[in-house]
Length: 416
Image 1: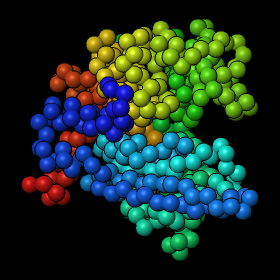
Image 2: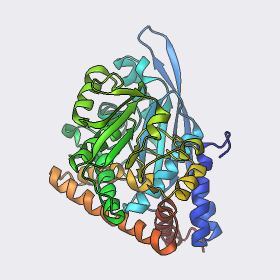
Image 3: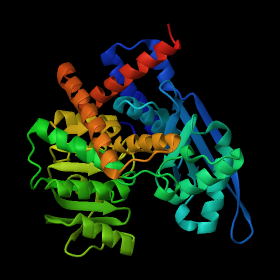
Image 4: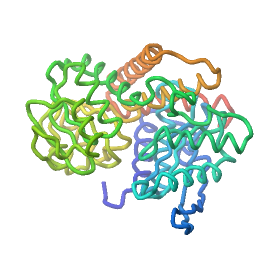
């Protein structure tokens, strides 16, 4: 992959690979190449010192053939249009793959939330929802948390939208607190879904999870819960990192203690009973399972040549570049792709939305059971396609997703 290859080019390459294998109708491919709608907004926010600051925001709706669009909103200094378009497209394929009635969307605000006071963050959140309110809604487009947004931000979103519309609208967003219509299991859903796919992959590949060595890149929500769930299956967490640095102990570390340390110190990089490790060394450690749970484009061709594991489960969106993918395949490393591995988050978001729309709420056991059924079924479809067509798991996942989108767009009459 060339250095100027942006993240949306990655999405288009993944589409091309699956379309070629499917001999996809060129009209369908054309409709999938560009989002149906992208709204850019400027959000004026009064800062605590009385000054006004302007923040740039964006909401992209990629494809709505299967239903209202769905996707997170991130607050991050490096939000840009190509990234948001890519994330929206991945959401389209992810929702289609697991069989839920959503299209894909994504949004973001270019800011550094770590430098904002709680009041400034609230005013920014409410201002953003005011700006994009014409194109969102429980039956149009349903936002959710993403990088540096959380249940509190979702509460502000929902409250502001409800004021604008003059009616309580809990179904506007997912990832809310339980008291405002959130769902049991939503906070850990991405990781729990990943755990189910790893468990099924281990069965298929004859990997013994008892004592299996796991490396987790990125110890945020998805990474920390993934470590805990895999630990409960008998795996050994030998390394993990966050934005401040990494820690390594070949004998294994307690992921629950790591989470507590992160909560108390805002990082895991000074965790005791471990040694420091760089991001590159962490990604190339000898292990059984590697879980990239950070940002896009982390496993580059240079890294892929040195990756030393049996299985990669992508908790993050787009952590592996296309050229790196080919190297991993040539080296016999199986990848559970992002649109499958991390689809538990949007699946339980869907459950939350359904509960909001009916005002009837499920137990945690019901949520986990429904999630397990969907994730296992999706994995089996992808793995079967992988074997039957002799393609990578990533191409297989896109084939399953695109077949459903193809059927929906033709049924709607978008193409002949």
